[in-house]
Amino acid sequence: MDFEKMNGLVPAIIQDAVTQKVLMLGFMNREAYDKTVQTGKVTFYSRTKQRLWTKGEESGNFLNVVEIKSDCDDDTLLIYVHPVGPVCHTGTDTCWGEDNCQPVMFLKELQQFISRRHEEMPEGSYTTSLFQSGVNKMAQKVGEEAVETIIEACNGSNERLIYEGADLLYHLIVLLTSKGLSIEDLANELIERHSATWKKH
Image: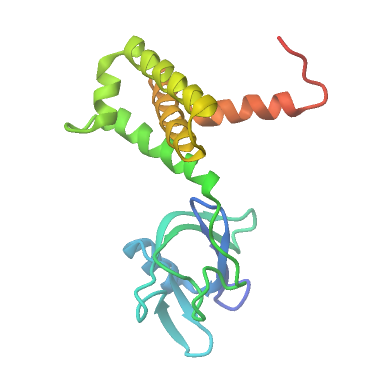
């Protein structure tokens, strides 16, 4: 990082790793950056207090680091985090008063979780048992959940439809993962289909 370009400080943009919401902007000097890397909790340099401060050191609302990126000029940081509680001192989720909630982005986190299960295969995990059952059993499970979703859509309640639909989506992600694919592959296919030039195969 080029800390000298702006008299020893660089801006650090803090973004939620799951929702992709920008949460706040702070400044870091080299010491704050090093402490952030070492502890895994975002630490800034306070220009008013003239000292380091770890976000959450008083409130407990820490910013747990997921990934740190530098921009093309090495003078701005983008830090992906998992926030613990509200980010702003006013009690709001972001320093712009926005709600940090995009439920659809949880699918990305779920995909990552299922992928880790596939790599680690911990004992006692339902997801592990699905992977161990083989592709045919996993595909059968997707079919069962699809039928249950259809039944709820035709004769059930909206609450049960959502419940069974969630089961279907979860088991589909497990099946995709077992084949080396992901929910992102489906998203990319839908993006391609959304193009005005797309033609059905």
